[in-house]
Length: 462
Image (tube, rainbow, N blue to C red; front, side):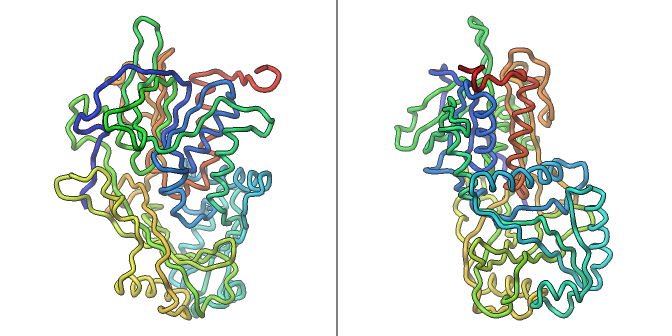
């Protein structure tokens, strides 16, 4: 599997232009993470201008609305990873927000099920969870206890790990709550924030205003329906690249402009996951989410958690996702080749493979009860042959001295007055669960390194 490598404005279609207007924060991408960050910045600095641009007609049209909507417990990732930290913190923040904003949520719990050969793995997973402390309650079950909770399980299932803090959330309602607060905060204040749809980012340049002393990033945007070269140029102090499947392209742009060989650009891989709805026998007693043992379990190098059973808010059952790696087109002629794959598989071979995977733990499920539902695409930084864990990547860059900065840079360099850019790469599962924790982390980093800790809200702002 060859990686996809592409920058923005690869063919020089858009020339540099001076900025027309200045903003404090510009967030690219109105998925769950981008919206959560915009929300956090608007609440912390309501007097600063916060713009979030989204190329689609509404929010959450890519990865954020094409997943299983699970509130993950954070069972699988290494102890000191960002995935574990943000998942554990984000899970509790998400449950709290759901209660405060009437967001549909259910703490249904999850069973990770295995055969006798999987006892050692589940025991080690239990020990890993215990080492994380009280934030990770789990219970190791024998065959009798597992079948008591899920009577439809296969006879071969002899052990399970029960995670009571796993749940499900209506992702659209969660994102809608983020967007609503960009108009009116819980305090009743109206922040200087705006969410703009139908707007694509087509070029990004570092900006150093020699005469004015202003520094930051010039971001050119193109509005849907406008003439091809009719763009707007915004100067922003803080640029947040939360564009999901396309996030590496902005950093690749700087490597392209610096004439760095393409082999050293950031690799992009896309793993399609297809879901199937189900109506039929074999799941009549299911109350929890059911997960098989993940692939590559021992090394935390999960490319997928396997074809599992999830529930929606109405109790309907669906299975998925599988893993289908998308190969880029020959010659790299398609800017976003993955966009043509946003339809679920529905051929006999796919149904057979899905049914076979399900029957390993739910033998009563009938093949003719499966129907194609939807699909999503994971933004991967490594391909199918990777055997090592890959964490979330939060990369910071300053607008001055960009050519001398490292690509994989995890802290903002000391550049007083410079603009700050954060690129969020590889934000796949558990990205939805982690969104609030990521947003709080970003706001804290900007408070420490850019704006200072002052929060001019309420009376102070007036």
